[in-house]
Length: 202
Image (cartoon, rainbow, N blue to C red; front, side, top):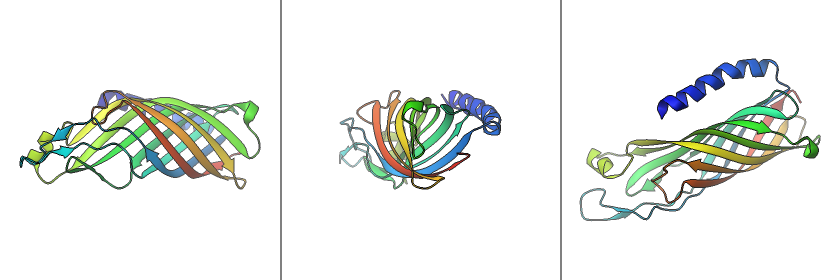
C-alpha cells in the first residue's frame, strides 16, 4: 500500500514542474470544515480493567490545505490534504485522522465567469489514522494502532468566488471512498469545507 502512495507521489512530482512551467493559472488555499462517518459500533476493553470504551463516530474540526495548477482554461491537476486539527478520543486513546489526494480538475467553461470558477475534482490518495498512547498494551487492543493507512478514491465539487483580483473564497463538498475503513462504520466519508485562497496568472 505504501509503495502505491509513493508511486503516485513520484509521478505527480515529475509532472508538476513541467505543468507549472506552462500553467495558465496556479492557486493555493487554506480551509476548515468537517468530515463525517458513523461508529463501527465496537466496544473495547482498552486498558484491561473491565471498562468497555465505545469506538466514536468521525467528526470534529478539520483543516484543509490544497493547491491546483491549470494547464489550459478547463483542465488542471491538484493536491489536497485534510486533517482533524485537535486530536479526538478513540476508545480511550487519542487519535487524528487525515486524508490526502492527487486529483484531475475540470472547470466547466459554460459556468465560468470573471468572479466565479466552478471545479469538479476526482483522484486517488490515502487515508491515515494515527493514535497517541502511553501504554503499548492499550494500543495493542485497538485495531490499527499505532497507525493505519488505507487507499482512497476522492471526488469533489467546489467553487471559487473571487472577492478581489487574486483572492477567492472556496466552498467545497468532497466525498472520500476509503478502502476497508474498519475504524469507522462506513467506507464513505463526506466532507464539507470553506477555504480562502490566492490565484496567480488569472
